[in-house]
Amino acid sequence: MAKKKQQDTLSSEEKIKEAARKVFMEKGYAATRTRDIAEAAGINLALLNYYFRSKEKLFELVMQEKLSSFFGLILPVLQDPASSLDDKIHTIADRYISMLAANPDLPLFVLNAMRNAPKKFAAMLKGADHLLQSAFARQLKERNPHVAPEQLFINIMSLCIFPFAMRPGLEVISPEIGATFNVLMEERKKLVPKWMRAMLKVK
Amino acid sequence: MAKKKQQDTLSSEEKIKEAARKVFMEKGYAATRTRDIAEAAGINLALLNYYFRSKEKLFELVMQEKLSSFFGLILPVLQDPASSLDDKIHTIADRYISMLAANPDLPLFVLNAMRNAPKKFAAMLKGADHLLQSAFARQLKERNPHVAPEQLFINIMSLCIFPFAMRPGLEVISPEIGATFNVLMEERKKLVPKWMRAMLKVK
DNA sequence: ACAAAAATTAATCATTTGATTAAAAAATTT
DNA sequence: AAATTTTTTAATCAAATGATTAATTTTTGT
Image 1 (spheres, helix red, strand yellow):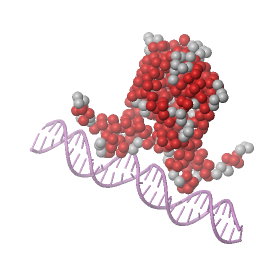
Image 2 (cartoon, each protein chain N blue to C red):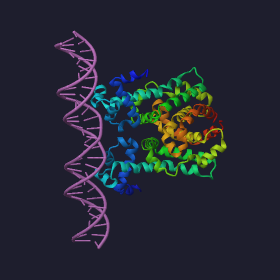
Image 3 (cartoon, each protein chain N blue to C red):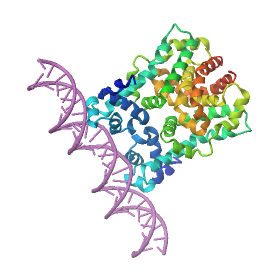
Image 4 (tube, rainbow over the protein chains, first blue to last red):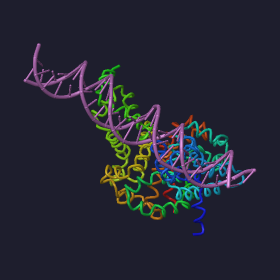
């Protein structure tokens, strides 16, 4: 109960943000009612607009946050010239799988955000473009000149992120996978680097 | 102009279905207004309810269709005991990449549908569960007893499908990828099988 | 303790939205 | 061609929804 006071003392503004994160992540922008958020936050509907002006502004705040945590995790790694390629691959796999195990709705939320508002997304990622000039791309190209580095970048993203996006479907086509999903993902922290090394040998 | 007559003669019911496919795929269920569909179909709003009773019924029709084309493509391959493992991998990669190049919105639509209505999705896929008892799973296990077959199943799905789901994001972090996306995907038809073979050697 | 500012609420508004109704138009049947 | 059925539309409804307003309560500063 050491943390109880802090929870109860959460400001209304923070309670609304917290509720907005939860509801927007679970249902997406269009399916979310501002009343749902107000109820989840335990505050009056008008208070939401008092603090955040509008549903859209509140959503952009949440989106900003989520995109930052999603890409903030990988961009510094890609651009680090000091670490080795193997290090980068290991770090990306390990961090992404850990983060997504704790935030299972994040992939679909980010994918939808990118598709529905590419302009806003581009604005938020200003300066983080030009993947192909990154240290990661250079190292991939050095290790395997036969395959375009963007292909291998797509691969590590796919292997780490997509399993979480397809989880609900996996649970239907194989209940066993549903039951052991977290174990499988934990295994992937070590497997993805091994698979990437194997793929890097392919011409 | 050989087909022109057929287009113009499209029945109202079919025009509505066609418009519903387009709008639902682009915007998702919640963000779609029945009026958008009516307008895109060039018919009166009331006619939509006359033929399809409700927005939800119309959506389920479209979802049924899309899920069928998405999974109908892979399930027979997985269960075919006659074809080799390499054949299966090649067929899946080739067909998925071709289909998704022609239907770029399909992955996100299917992922959202599975997450938002897993019950309905399960009902539609009745009899297609038990992936782990499929010929594909058995062949994976024979070829590489060290890695769980579900991991490799997840991998081929990820490598084929995820690139299309992340395309809008890729275009932002690397405009060059955006410009050459279709070429990259075409290359992947041959690369994915090579990568899968390489991964199958990993213990 | 009092005034001013900030936070919170109930009530309400204006639009949007899915759906229905009743009537008109078109097609089909007799 | 008259009657019947099917298709289509304009008008409208009721509920949902994002947002505002005006009043009340709470907090802060003096």
